[in-house]
Length: 518
Image (tube, rainbow, N blue to C red; front, side):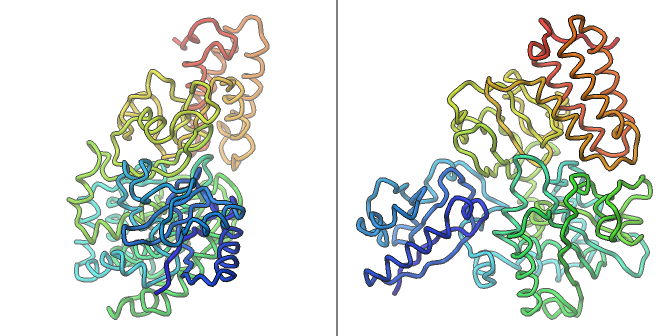
C-alpha cells in the first residue's frame, strides 16, 4: 500500500512554490523507486510554513515545512515517507501549537480534504446538513438558523435568520440566493480559502438557504482577482450537478436549485450588497438606496438572500449538529466562531478560527508570535481597510461585535493587519481617505467629495503650524461622512482616520490628544 503524502493547492502555497515541491517530490521518488500517493489538499492556513508537506503515518499526519524543492532530496534521504526525523519536521500536524489552540468548526476540513473530492467531503461530514434540511419544513430550517444566533460574517453582523425569514415570507414566483465572495478587504483570505479549499461546504450552505426560502437559483459573486477560486468553484458546481446535489432534483427530493458563478467587476464598492446586485445584473456597480431592502426587492427586483461565504459555509454544520451546538461557542450575541486572519507585520501569519471572546493580544502573541520585524507593535487595524486602528490600551477588549462597537471599532470580516512602531499613522489615515476617493461609486456627495476633501485636510493638518482649525475641520468632515453617506464605504472611512487621530496624535504633529468638537 502506497504512502499518502499531502501538499496544498491553495493560492498561498502555490505562490510559495507548492507546485515545484510537488513535482520535485514526484520525480525524485520515482527515480528512487519509491511508491507514494501524492494528494493536493487544501491549506491549513499556517502560511509562514507553506509549502507544508504532510505524510500519513500510523501515528497520524506528520508535518514538514516550509519545504523548498531543494529540500526534497534530504527529506527522502531521511525517510520522510515514513515520518523520518529531519530539521524541517514539525511533528504531528494537529499538535502544532498554532493549530492545537484553535477551535476549527467551520474550517474543520481545511487542510485535511482534497477540495474537489466529493468522497472526501462526504467522509468528513459533508451533506449531513442538507439531509437534515430536507427532512424539515422551510420554516423549521429558518428557525434553526435564527436559534443559532448566526450573524453575517461579511462585516455587518446582521442576523442571517432574519434575512432568511423575510425572504421566506415574501410573495414571489422567483427568489434568489446570492453569495457575496467579493473579498476585497486588505489582509483577509478566509473566503478565498473556503472557495479554493472547501467549495462543497459553500454549495451545501447555499442549497440549504435556497430550499429554506423557496429560491431556485443562486449566484456566487467571486472577486476577479481570485482566478483559482473561480476555477475551483466552477468545477465543484459541475461535480455537484452530476452527483445530484444541484439541479432539478436535489438529492432525490424533487426540489430544484441551480447555481452559477459570476466574476466580480474589480471594484471594491461592489462588495456592498446592492452594488453587487447591480453588477450581477450587468450594470455599473453603484449603491442602491434602501428601502426597498434586497430581501424584498433584490436581484432583478426579486426577493433575495445575500450572505457572505463564511455565513453560508456555517449553515451546514448548524443544520447537522443543531442550533444549540453552534450557539454554545462565543459570547453574548456574538455566537459561534470566526476565522480571524492574521496579516501585516506578524511573525506567524495565517488563519485562526476561534470562538468570539478572545482578545487581540492573544491573537497577536499566542498565535502570531509578535511582530515579524521584532519591533514593538504600535497599532492593529481590525476589520479591513475601513476598520479602526486599535491601540495597545484596547488589545484586551474581547473580540465580539458589541464590545468592539463600544470602543468605536468593528470586528468586520475578521481581518487583522499589524503595524509596528515604524508606521506613520497620519500617513495611514490619509491612505484611508485616498482609498475611499479612489473606490467610491460616486453616488453620494459625502463619500465622493468628502474623501477628496479629507485627503486635502489631512495634508493641511500635517503641514500647518496652527493645527486647531484643520483638526476641527477633519472631525466635522468625518461626522458628515459617517452619518450622511449612502453606504458603509463613506460611512466607515472615518473609523481609521479618527482612531489614528485620537490614539496617535503625535503622528499628526499634535503634542496632546486631538481636541474633540464641542
